[in-house]
Image (cartoon, rainbow, N blue to C red; front, side, top):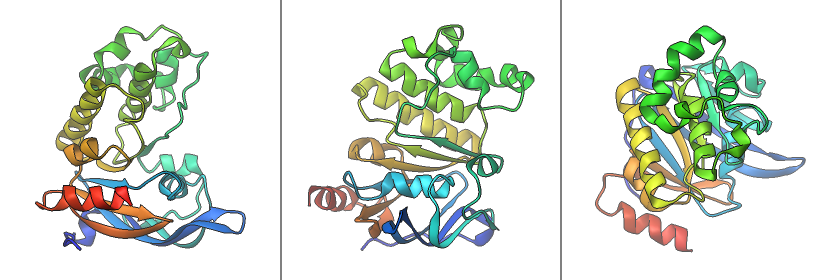
Length: 243
């Protein structure tokens, strides 16, 4: 197993400790532990049905944890309501196209900030990442293409200027040029703003192009973790994802 970098507690943005969660009496996530520092991207890899989305939903408060702790900057936020977790500068971009189809692009972006003043001030963040979204502010969100809707989802997270982003399968269904754009935006956000990102993915090339560290989830458990920069990482991950 590859070595894992260790971070001082003062640097840690998110710490997940022995987390178990699921639906009804059936556990889906089992005793998962990891931490992430400011300005770092951790990718959670695994096949469908392994618990990756449930893990993010548990961190965000949509699924109840039955054991373990979730800490943001040292504060225990386990099983808090999602809107209270969002107030801790956490932005969640779900796998589903979770936009309001009948609202305009601008109205969807407004959901990511506290007031209209902040929306106007921070549109430059969106324009720097996705100029096409700013060009379509008054367009109904449901009329956007699939790729544009993914841009809008990520933009809604960026406009909140979060300390941590939880992003689920942002590359799914996108053309290669759009995947490359998503990678560019995530790396720029990390480097300029020091945002920590937990990225759930199945697209291995995309994951390797943006992540600092990885963890592989199988049947709800982390079975491998390490640094993306290690020479054998790609081969290790391909083997795990093939099985």
